[in-house]
Length: 452
Image (tube, rainbow, N blue to C red; front, side, top):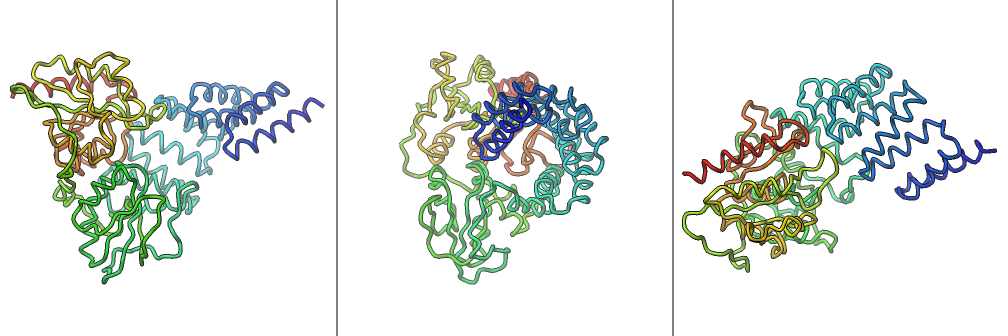
C-alpha cells in the first residue's frame, strides 16, 4: 500500500515538473521520498527540479543520494556532473561525466555533457572531439550542434561556427519566427522589405547591430524589431529604415531573419569586424549630463553585474567591493552605470561618496551611451554595458569569467583583446569564481593608465 501511494505521488510530481510548476513538484517529490526513500529516480528528479531553480547545493545532494542507490547510472552521473559544472567545480564535473561515458559509451547525451565540461575547463580541442562524436551518433542533436558552433567560434572559426549555431532554431523553448514568410539567405533584396527580429538579450542585439548597414547594401527596406530599451540606438544606425517594438504590431514585410543569424547570412569575416566599429552613436538630445571634470582625472564608469544576475559559474557578476578597491588610486573619478537587481549594492556598501550614481537616471541604452560618451574609461563585467561601450569605440576594460562566453575568445594566443571591439581589453579569471588575479592585473593597469 505504501509503495503504491509513493508511485502515485511520484507520478503527480513528475506531471507538475513537466508543467514547470517547480515549487509544487518539489513538495510532491518530498512526499514521495517520505513514502519510499529507496527510489533513486525520485532523488534524481528532485535534483533536476532544484537545479532548475538554481538551488545547486541541494540538487547535488539529491544526485549523490541517488547514486548511493544506483551507483552506475549514467544519467544521474551526468546530472551531478552538470551541477558541478554550474557550481564551477569543473574537475569534479569532468570526473562524473567521464564515468558516465564509460558506463554508456553509446550515449550522445553523456558525451555531449562531457564536452561542455571540458570546454568550460579550457580544453576546446577535446570538447570539439566530444561534440563531433555525439553528432556522429545523433545527427539531429540541436543543442550539441549549437555548442559545437560556439566552440568553433571560440577557436576563431566564425563562418563554420555560425553555420552550426543556426541549429538553435530547432531547440525546444526557442521562440520560432513567423513561418509564413521566408527566411532571408543573404541574397540581394531588390527593394523588398526585410524584418530583422530581436533574439536573446540586449547585448546580443548591440553586438550584431554592426551588420545592419550591410543588410541595407542589399537594396531593401530594413525594419528592425527590438526591445524599447535599445530602440533609440538601433534607429540611429545608418541603413535602418524603421524600428518596431517587440510584441507590437508588425508592418508588412517580405522576408525575415533573426539578428544573430546575420553573420551567417552575410558570411562576415573576422578580419573585417574591427573595421565596423564604432557603429552606434548616442542621441544628440539627451538629459544625461555628468558633473564636469575636476583637474586631471580619469573619469571612469563602473558596472559590476548584468541586469539579471545568473546562478553559479554562469553568473558574470563580480563583487562591488572589488571595484571599490580601485578607487583608492589617486586620479580616478568614478561613476556607477549599474542598473537592475545589483544597483542596490551602492547603498548596501555605503559608498555614495566614492561613486556618483548615474545608473538610476538611465531609462534605456541610449541614455547609457550618452553617459559613456562623457567618460574616459569603462570598467565592467560581460553585460549590455560592455557591448554599448565597445560599439561606441570607447576604451573599455571587461572582467571576464573563467568559463567565458564564446564571444570573448579569438582563437589566438592573445586573450586580452576582442575581435569584436578593438577598443576593448579583457581581464580574465584564472579559476572559476576567483576574481583576485584579474583585479590585481586591472589595478596595475589602471594605476599605469592614471599615471600617464
